[in-house]
Length: 192
Image (tube, rainbow, N blue to C red; front, top):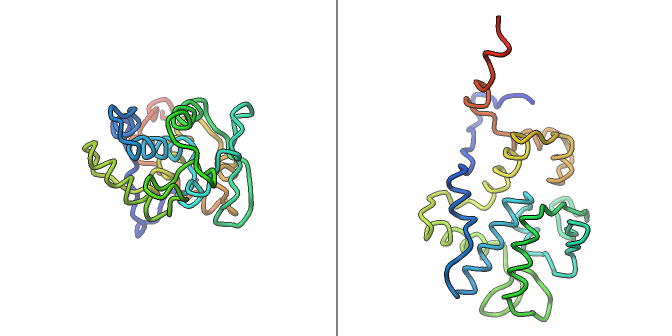
């Protein structure tokens, strides 16, 4: 995987501490807080785009097969996205406490019970993160964080490309954030 060019700015992904903070289950009865918690968990654990997350319906989730059907994607193709067990558990908690909406969207406006718009999700997560003391508020950066974490844990780039629904490996490479610590790790094992 090639390193970023000098003119490209390396995005600083969410740290483990920041992720731990925003993944903590809410201690409130505020339904929007629970929705935002479930959305953050879903994005960080699947790498889905915000627009795809807003389109998810309960009927699309197959918890037994650990996957969710992404009907709306940037490339206009449907695909199954794997759901890790932690994401499933969060979604089940959210399903148990959220009202059943007429259209069956997983993430909906608390006020209208209609599909949540991507910009509304962005603003909700911005506020959610800031309230938890996290200055990073980018939803798309969560997608980058997922990709970086996936590869750091030994995942294959070819599989990541399919999970992220990228048409080309070049696009996936833009999501990979090899930073100094990654390059330094284990270097003494490979030198004379």
